Image (cartoon, rainbow, N blue to C red; front, side):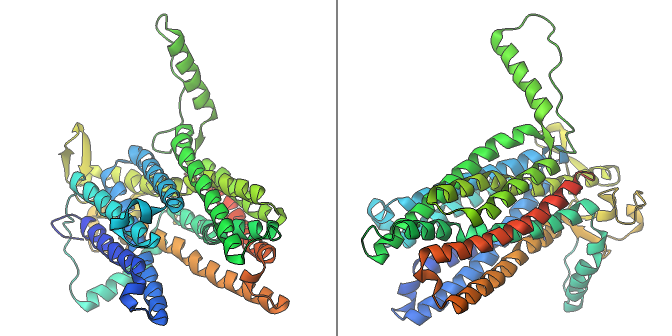
Length: 470
């Protein structure tokens, strides 16, 4: 955006407003529909689709803001903290699912969903307001396109210039495509999988089917809550044992100049161990995907609630890495390449001091200059001054992250179609509705999750190959 409020703020604020409106529709669907069940279903479905679009736009804008504000050497730390904030949100969200919010906060709504969406809207609005207020942005100086022909040309340029992306970013996109085919079945059906195993194990305990399913759902929610806690803990610890291309490998502390205390000796020993065991970002990503792939495929041979809960919890380690490493590598690639061209672009000192600089015209960077590992293999930087700012082979950081989001969203449709087809085939062969038999449905879900695990296995291979480039 060329708005005077900044490049990202208009999109951040707009998508936040859209998200809040969609949450309000979801919370008060029955009241808005006036008791008409069919209309309520349509309203809820439309609101969820718009919410998905708004959240994706918000996430892409916020991730682009991290790329804009932080230098290459701090991209890893910035995305790691973003992962931690996501982990805290997951833990709090699952925890509120166990609370009787209507009794605790009756003034926020008459149903659990109404109170939950009200709290989510308030927290989202408050955190976005803090981010927009305290983050300094430089407006994009490039003039915006106005005519419809220019807009069509921009879309054509987007697709035709994708071949100019750095090899590292291209491979990250491919890895994300296969990784998220594995993640979406886990996210969609994790709770239902545990719930169905619970129903199958306690079908003879007595009680109505509704009561049994409610207890099973609580067991599934508890498993996902534990997974969120594990993910939060992993996001706190794992970044301490990784290094990026921008920072280089961790080095052990130098020998002390004189005598040191026992505490200092112990800290130095810990730092030395940390330097020895630390791995690069691509290696951490490959290991985490291997853990997730193994856990997903093990669901095929799991028949107890306890073991299924353990598998979901183990996936929390990989989920923390998924929310951190790929975004960090993309940010470092963009900012790392842009830093090599700073001598040709206008600079100004940042508030942090004379040694901290931010780039004024960061909005659109020729991507051939971002990474020496370009597809043509020349490894030479082009003459930036010989190309006008609107050259079609230029993509902004926001556009790159937007395309990255596409490679995350596409697996959602692939997974939804594939899982619906699998469930329909089993229902036709067995003549039983999926929700009519807990253990039977659990095996079907396990098949879907394990197929996602196979796709995650492909992502493991691709991410392991990425180590040679990043």
